[in-house]
Structures are given as structure tokens and as C-alpha cells.
Image 1 (cartoon, rainbow, N blue to C red):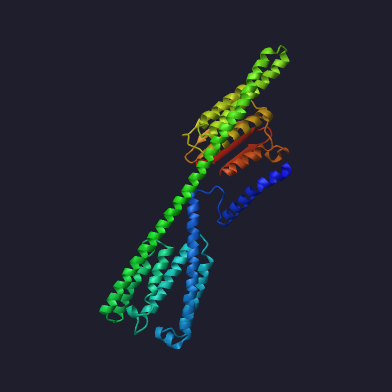
Image 2: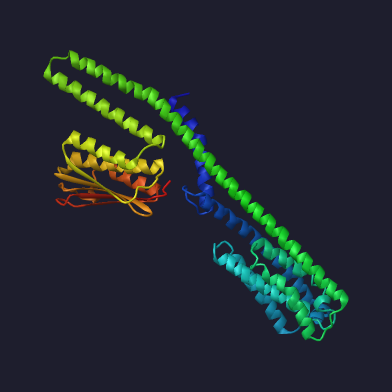
Length: 428
């Protein structure tokens, strides 16, 4: 098998994994920078939608039974559901049930519409329980439905105030019995106490289990995030060791050999070439050390940027001025690397193309963002006419987009260049 075939076989599992991850993120309307809080919120929304759909199917069963009651004269007469008004109420329930089903997936409207329509269902249930003159109220065969409503409210909205409506249904039914001059017997009082006890048991069990389930899920999500972060740190440390022991040792040997050859060389032009080679190797090993510090998360951003500006100024003889403001904040390694690369790219472009006299670099920490600006007084350019094969600006924008930040390049011929890079302080 050729090297190309081997590479293709190695990439296939990775591409399949990316495709699966992308499909899940798209289905949940999430990004690849999802946090633990966003993952928990997405899970809670999916759980609510699943339960709200179950409520819709339960409503369809109730509506089927309701249609059966309307169709049997003896049953409809018992509940007093006769005439156009009864059918109008039935179709009203059907319409708002369907409307509720259509907005279930909406993060806010779905919850509010479901709650209010469920309250309407509860009101209709209380009316059906109380309305019969004989066998109504606490004697109604539909009284057990109240327990189902308590369960539905507790499953969908496991908060004390949200569950209050079904709990009030029993005392309201009792009060309506008294207003309709129905005496409450000892057996009916026992029924009231029995149903009240069952309601509190249902509420306690469902709310308790819901809280345990939510807490367990949050713990698992946080643990997954911690394990992922730990794996990243361990892999970075492993790579740092390998790079230090391999590439670092090779660059050190190159510097030592350059110094030895430099001591033997007599020709002036040859010594200059060897000196340039040695300087390049020293710059490379300094870049290597800087990257290793960032990988091991012991890189001090502000000092690192200032040191690089100083080194670049000495090497190019450009008048580069560094300024910092605000209280430095802890940034992720990716965010620190992005800021450093933007500075490198900006200064490199200035040295190669700008013909500038003065370059101003400013690092500014605000309460929630970090801003890096590189401004020169050079000849400028038209950002819309970037030469083919030059990807510096594109790389800047990709780095900013990955971290949820933004990069602005403001320039015109003869007006210098301003590169402004900004990312959130909590960028991952």
C-alpha cells in the first residue's frame, strides 16, 4: 500500500468522528466551542421537549375519550356537555394542543405555551369534576385525573411554584362543592386527605428524582470536560518533552557547530554567512522555548510579548514601541498563542512591506476582553487587493473566529496599517 493510501486510511476514522460530532452539534444548534453549561442547558431542553411531546400524546388520548363522551348521549348528559358550546370547547382544546406541539422546540415559547395550555387543561378537568349535579365534586370518577396532572406538572416543571396549580385543584373542588350546597361527608373528607397525601408523595418523589438526575448529569458533563482538559494537558506535556529532547537538542548542536566553524573561518563573507546561520538557529531555539512554555502553561503573556518586541527591534533596527494597560488576566494557551502569532505576523509584515519609521504595539486588558493593536506609519496597502498566495490576513481571521474574537485590518495606500485583534478573556 502506498503512503497516500496509508494516510487516507489513518484519516478515515478521524473524519468519521468529526462528521458524527458535527451532526450532533448541528442537531442541537451548538458550536464546537460548547461549554459545560451549554451542554447541560441543551440536555435539559431535550429532556423537556421529550416530556412535552409525551404530554401531547396524552392529550390526544384524552381528546379521544372526550369525543367518545360527546358521542354517547348518556355520558354527555351526565357532564352537561350538550349543544354547540360543548363541541366548540372540544375543538378549541384540539387546536391549542396542536399549536402547543408546533412550538415545543422553541427554547422559551415552548415552555411558556406548554405551561399555560396545561393550566387550561387543568381548569377544564376541574369543571368536568364539579359540573355533574349528582356524583360530582369529590365523588366524581374523574377525580383521579388530578393525580395525573400533578405528575405532569412535576415532570415538566419541577419547581414548587410551578406545581402549585394542580395542588390547588383539590381545595378548589371542595370549595365549589360547598358553594353548590353539597355537604362534605366523612368519606369525602377522607378522599380529600387521601388525594392530598398522594399529591405530596408524587411531588416529592418526582422533584427529588429530577434533582438527582440533573445533578448527576451536570457532574458527568463537568467530569468529561475535566478529563478532556487533563488529556490535552498531558498530551501537550508529552509533546513538549519530545520536542525539547529532539528538535531542541538538534538546534543546540547546530549553534555549537556554527560557533566552531565560525572560529575556523577566515573569509569575511563566509564568517558573515555563518554568523547569520547561527543567529537564525538561536532565534529558532528561542521560538521553540517560547512555544514550550506556552504548551506547559507557564508562559507569561505580557512579558513574552514585550520580550519579542525587544528582540525584533534589535534584529530589524525598527523603532517599535510597546505599551500595555489594564490588569492582566489568565488566558488559555490557545488564546495566548493566538495573541503572540498575531503580533509576529503584524511585525513581520511591517518589516517586509511597510517601509515604516515607527511601529506602536499596544496590549490592553479590559474587564472581559483582551485587545492587541499593531500600528505603523508605513506606505499602507489596499486590504481588498491581497496578493495571491499571501495568507497572513486569512490566518489572523481564522484564529479570531476560532476563539470567538475579531480582527480588523484598517489601511489604505500612504496611510499606514492598523491591525486590531480582540478576544474574550475566557476564550478557549
